[in-house]
Image 1 (cartoon, one colour):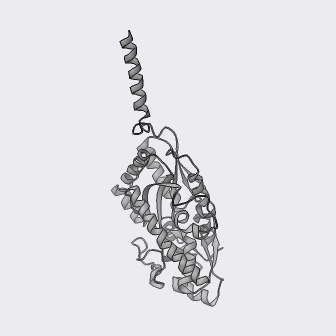
Image 2 (cartoon, helix red, strand yellow):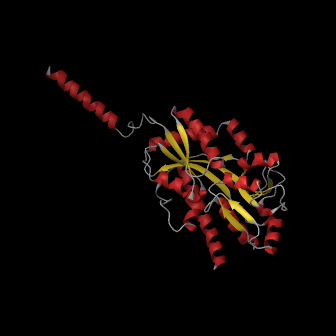
Image 3 (cartoon, one colour):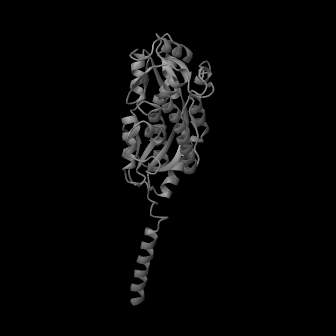
Length: 325
């Protein structure tokens, strides 16, 4: 009898040790809904990418994945929400340049530290932008914008998705390179800025190419310049900004991140699923047609990319600030 009791106890101890072992404790993940926070309004490129990735993760992981739009304060509100969340893999962030590279130069205080409060998961894609105007506009390229703005300082209204966005930085960079003055009009996201541009309430707005192309094809908006260093296959007749002003341009990047301290096993599962998705030929072809370029790679690749961007953007702000003194 004692042998049986001892055997039962030993089995319980063995089972407990297996269940508590770090390598197997996460085997059941995900057990509930996963939330991807997009720190912008719906309808923009960040939202588009997040919803595509969410749908693939739903199929790959066998669990509900929802997109939660939390716009405001140059994407700081949604980003801070993720930084404060539990690092259990159920709250993720569709990360963009603003909160991780621009915003510390623009906002006096952030409710998170972009360098330490997050876990890198996967670098999803690079997406160039396009400067747009409405069909009744007098402008056809960036040089004409600069020429008019020099003669009429502040008369051109240039909308952006918000303070701290890449669109905002493009406004500042344009004024620095051209010597012209325009009026920056920040919104809470790209979709409302584009709506007001189509209505003629503002003169210019920057949007990412994938979400802008339908409006260009329909004739509701007119492209002036792309923010890549070269012309794009999707918009071959549109000049790159650097053709008018060398050095003008910036490409948005998108990534998945989570709160600091996410389990390595969870990061690996998400990373593998996203890498698989963006490597599919049909996805690559569809994204390429919209000038979305999948990247992928390890979490370390994302970390290295962000460090490089932080340095590059820091130098740009140093130049901008020195010119304003």
